[in-house]
Length: 313
Figure 1 (cartoon, rainbow, N blue to C red):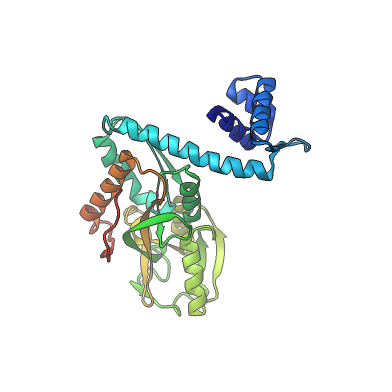
Figure 2 (cartoon, rainbow, N blue to C red; figure 1 turned 120 degrees about the horizontal axis):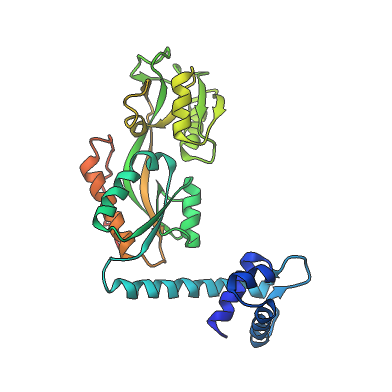
């Protein structure tokens, strides 16, 4: 059994088509078929179902490819570890970040990190929290900034800070002069919110249900900038972290805190428990911690007190 044959099998499974897989591998379709046939002869059982219009893995193929992908991950980690023996001069980080934190915190972390490590490439994806955990699980992401506690197995999280959610309205809204609001104040309040795929929305829905509030959601939008622009021009209110509005000090918006109970969630740094954590990602994680320590007052962040030592390796 050759590593090349296993990689061929993986690409055929991903493409569900011999022709497209052959094109991406820069080999002829007949040569690709011959290699898969040799692999099947070696294991003694069909690995691909060729009877349908699309090529699919058999049950045996699923088992073999699942183990093979673990081998691919281990080999990639080994190559990375060997390169890092020469120091953090080259490499890349694939980071997933939730939209609210990406709006006000991640850019500063990236800026500081790139000053120290200018040759490290970064790819940042703005994703809902559940998709960040999925990306870490699949290996597509190396590091995530989402929420803790996590919901996926084999994903570890380190609490970074607590975010306070607030109601945001335009400066000429009837509630604009209030510093705090009670559930009675916002009963039936017309709102523009993020979709239910976002933690911010789910937290609000849970709060409304527990408080017996009838939500009056008039509009859903999937970006913070569009929500704030809409709220500033209408009588609609929205729910977002307080730190977001602190980055829009010149806009005609007013921030209202919940009197009781307050709405908070904990932002955390996430990684896969069993995957190799490269030196670049560990360095970026430390930059994030340093910024939180320095900027906690500016961002109005509540820093958790760790109850146990947090692993860094």
